[in-house]
Length: 185
Image 1 (spheres, one colour):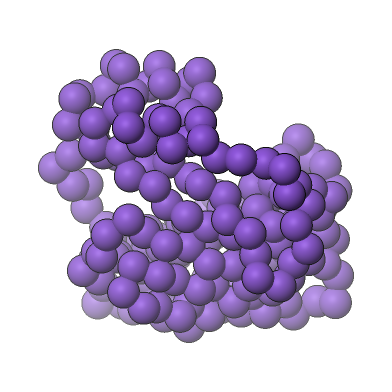
Image 2: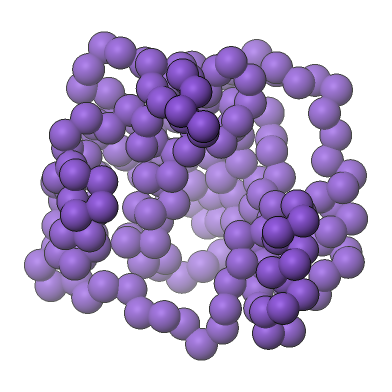
């Protein structure tokens, strides 16, 4: 698999290049899923100066794992420690290593990927007050038919207003897989 990352301020586009012809994969709950389109976008709520490539790759892997065979090639480079961890955990090689790049270090504040479900709300209530929370808000993919045209996002928008330090990340990634919009893994 070849991953190309295109960056603009706050906006990222990930292009997936499959080495095999199969677009079938195994997703959540071991359900068979199909890759409907080879790219997805996400928009951050504010510009981040040079996000660490290991962090970007970790986020990308949560989307593309069902289609990775034995190697993933990146249009950018990751740290050797991250590449080794990917091989240890997932069993495939990472092509695109910068031997001089130090692995990402823990920051000074906690962060929470926040869905708005019961477990996210519980975590938000027990983590330190200054925890930064990012809530995913599904956007329509420009090149994939809308599978759930009646779905609204007012609940997610209410959460943004209810919790302090909460920001929206808009993405069309759930529309690149079929049967229905879903997070691949």
